[in-house]
Image (tube, rainbow, N blue to C red; front, side):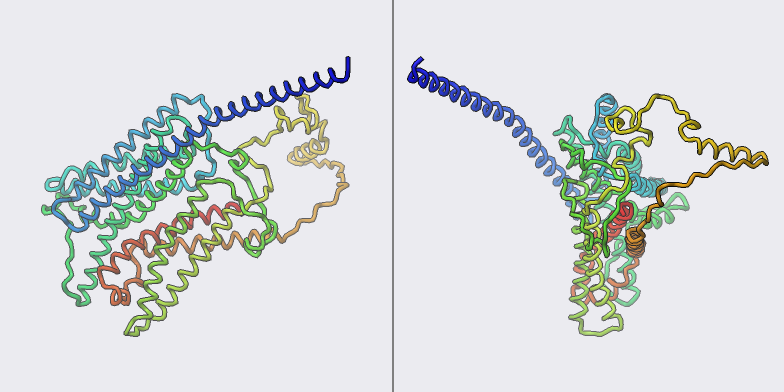
Length: 532
């Protein structure tokens, strides 16, 4: 064959190869495009469903807020019966959705369900269960109050506590067994169901806040009237008939001591359900979706000196914790800065003026420092000291790849043969029980005992003590304002600067946020305590 013909054949083969390779690459690109199109459309559907469900829930909240504003103005067109009837319908819809969700999960019990282990912990659910029990006691008081005045009040006042108690029991069951589920079926319908539950609890929270604020406002007006202030209208909410039992006044006065627990219950439930809503359709990262037994830090005065990097993996629960800390801090910061403005602009100089200024500045500084401590603690990447998954059994991994690294296992345990010293110790203990002495040969270890560095233990102990101190401090700072003890905001300085109505409205907005901040900080700090 001549060199010319050989060159021609080579060019022909190269051309064929180039054409085939280009066609195969183009076909591969077409396949990739076709494969990527369904995922893009699924992402678009997911985003649209998320936006629509969010708008649905927001409008539910706004409808309830409009009814509450009209009720707060004591308009004859809107009564308490209308608001309670609206909220009762929302609770009934949520009960139907939860029943459908549980039955669907039981029907597909054999199917594996992804779970987000960071969604909640047992102690958080236990705390919510305690708050739910106190809410049930409040419902019992409401029913007793209705029984005493049933001849002159609407039947809605009796139906509402019954539905609320049923809703509370069903919701606690749902939180215990299904709050960690990552929904992958009927995603659009489930988004609307979960967001309906979120905003139903938010509306119940707003209703509790409004009732407590009205009670606080009436008590404040009574105190001002006793001090000589006039032109103050006190709204009386008692029915027009006489109570048929002797316990109506006790039920009525006891309700307001239980409102703080009911308020915290509903806001915490709405936050947990919001995490579940964010997890719908989410692909769980198995590397970060693991519980950890224990962690150890590598050097810190607190966490600032720790060289471990921050954990930036996607975690809706942790992100929500951060957002709630900042959002609820705004209430306390706003009250503090209003007090600072009132102190600096006051014309009089009462003895508590500069104490009020110092207190307000310390509150701002305390929340800034505490938020930084909590967020850095929750986002700090930890080095695992033990096993990654506490739910794994402690027995040898016989049926696993890791068992290949272990000594051979033949299915028979002869502990006296494998470890004669242990058998000797057991025999020694048995004969000592019968009054006889039996001495076993003691074998000295060839390896020296490891030297334990006490510095990390001391640092962990310091961190634990800091966390415990902050937990107790936040609980103490929650108890006083939750039951109406707010002397720092009722001394008259802010009222002289901003006016009675403006300052009262500010308190009604900011105090519930501050109460939620304290309880949420306790939950976050307890998580920090467990992680140290």
